[in-house]
Length: 625
Image (cartoon, rainbow, N blue to C red; front, side, top):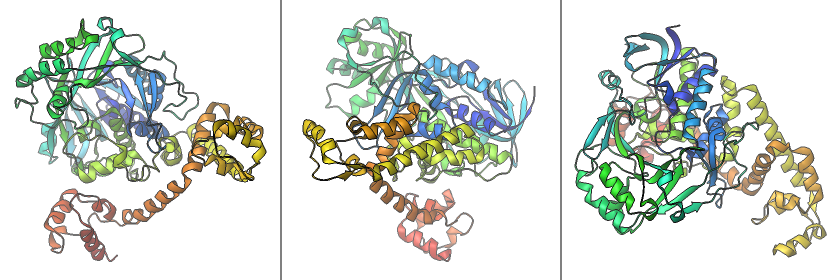
């Protein structure tokens, strides 16, 4: 048993698991401390990974060498590619996972990761002497380390609400963690409270399935992991849809006086984009129904998650309201929905490495930074774990820019703008989303991750091989000519404009209604090239990557040029260069915000709300630029 480590990670949720795994893989001796080893990577809310912009984050985690994508693929019971009817910048993978198998697989991974130890306990204090030096637990044990990563989720002073009933805890039936917030406040770290919630869990045996509509399964070849050996192995299960009605809303309104959200019991701010059912009926008073998704919690379980029915209303109101929905007329509930309030810390006091600017060696990731979602937490956790490992050996931090990754957008938003509600990632937050597609996260990130020792040699070589096969196909398409007589009979049958003269294959693929595999069915030499030059196991992935570059190459090049132009400001260092309070030509708001956030570069300063272009010009003049 050892008591000295390079990295200690507090909390084994999605952020903590990625942080501990990344640090250990990079060679840092790592200790992961969790309240309950049977709840590792618990899916506290819905049993799903990915979604709009979130799916891109998971693909980035995989490209970097993280494990969330692999665990999701191997425990998926449904997979969908959202926004597939739109351009590839908007495609977002999403999977339903088996909740129990997801947690069990993460534990197996962690228990078999070299350099990683686990300890079940509650951390009540940090050991700090100018910098963080370890932790002290509820059991009275001290562990020492060069760095500490806090990924405590909703557990710091967690308080659950079911109507007027209040229960201290970080998750249903699990205790809250007390002590860390108070200590961090005393050290000068700003803290506040946030709120989130979760729906009832219902017994599938009590649902009248004939009164639901089925959300059909997609026969889709996509997955999260870039590793070809990772496949979806579990039985696939469909989700079902039901709707609330006027009677449902009437009962919910009757419960509002006892709702913690409306009687003053909860003061903290909840997620704007995942409102409770009581918030929906108050906000959208003119709507006579709301859609609810019945999502399976596992491959074989009868437990279902009612997506869209998040609530902190009294249990009897939740039950009465559900009974008004035809499919739920005999409903049986496993446990009610509830809201939970918890502490978070102002992320503007962090650097882009997620290290605290107040306490050297302390890193924070996940919901403690004011975010919501497994994916946002896992992305932060991976970056925090990487940087904790690098810090422990006095190496420079690893950060991602806004044009490199959604994870870069996420972290830059947090440390530059802060949060006034739980932060959730959307594609609209990324100004370079054509560059941040889900198909090419490996091309963007694997080489950088390999350079710091996280992505292994196998993953790096797979990326190089994919790039080579993709680029050679594009060269083949540019050099190969298609004669009218070879393709016009097919075009006549499908109503496509006929060729009047020989055309390059590349230009045919540019046509909106055509795709590579469609043409391969008509042109034997194209089909032969694919069969002889593109590996079978990754054929769909490589062909898709080539097709996206062919069809959208012009847009991608223009956005890359814009990103490169803006990057010049990212290279102009600002932190520690100017006494903002002495610069009277800056606006008062600009001085106040520059002092508070202390941006590292002029580029970061330009993204602070309230900083005008004229303020940036003044800074550049002062820097001699």
